[in-house]
Length: 241
View 1 (cartoon, helix red, strand yellow):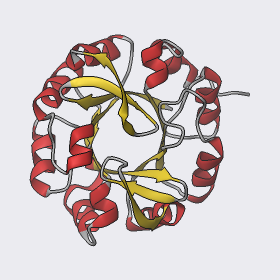
View 2: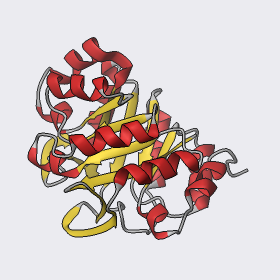
View 3: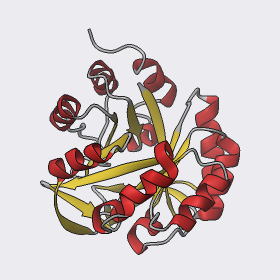
View 4: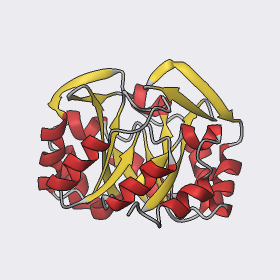
């Protein structure tokens, strides 16, 4: 299982929200590219970057910082947040981003996701952010009318290769992740699944690896020191027996 250390960007800084609340934001780094360099030095093969302002407002606000992060980290960077046009996708791929993540556009713009899959194939991932039973959009500030699990099944049927799924109620709370959700998704969807939101313990990483999840995103627990990145990478290689 691949560990994706995360950098959430706001005003060019690395921050973390608690349960998606922009009013509950903690700054963890003034120099995100140096964080990315540290991820690579710790052995990370991939990194997960989110432009929080882009996600909320609808267009990227941290492109320059993301370019520098990609230069520091190299191959393996996936980026989400405000990616709602082909032009933005092209720009991210041009600077070396390996995979772009569609969220709001996939859930809210009919026909957009199938067309992007046709044009860019495996370079497109989808993020499904769950609040209650519904899909949250626009940086988690609004709820769509889509049932979350039904939407996950639908995008799997479209041919999406990679799904990133976050239980917002768990994200940034350091109280553990939603293992039941990932059991359900793994049982139903024969696609690449990445767990996100609330991962707080090494045993959770081992359990996700045993579940044959393809990836896990590590955020606040890494920044607080609860789970050192190097230990998470090792735990992902050694699932619970």
